Image 1 (cartoon, helix red, strand yellow):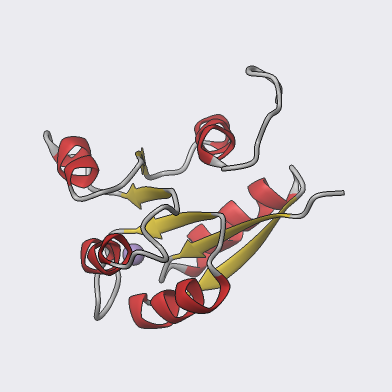
Image 2 (cartoon, protein in one colour):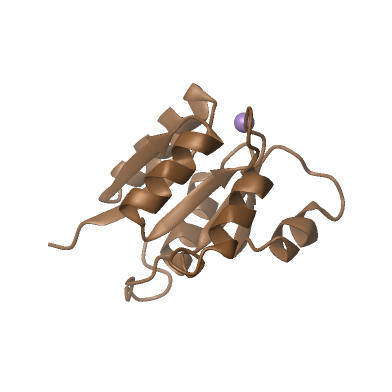
Length: 131
Ligand code: MN
């Protein structure tokens, strides 16, 4: 059976626990990093198939981390879904312009998270609409 791995970079424990529960329930293995520096180190070492990226991180924030990913020829193909509580007009466009493949606003909704992870997961060939 194929192991589906997602890396989530998020400083908030409760968000990590929620996303972990949701994704594990669907057979994903969730790797976790608490800040941008350790997240980037894990990305370089593990080259995860899909990245969930909190924008508001201590130290190196999500957009800075995203710039590192997109500037690296070995990493730039990895799909990145941004997560943020920020819901200002234009945020979605700003994050997509920065190189994110998609955007989820917090609080995380189960259905939206699963749909977007499935849609962007590179080797996912399940039929559309399957839950
Ligand atoms: Mn945060």
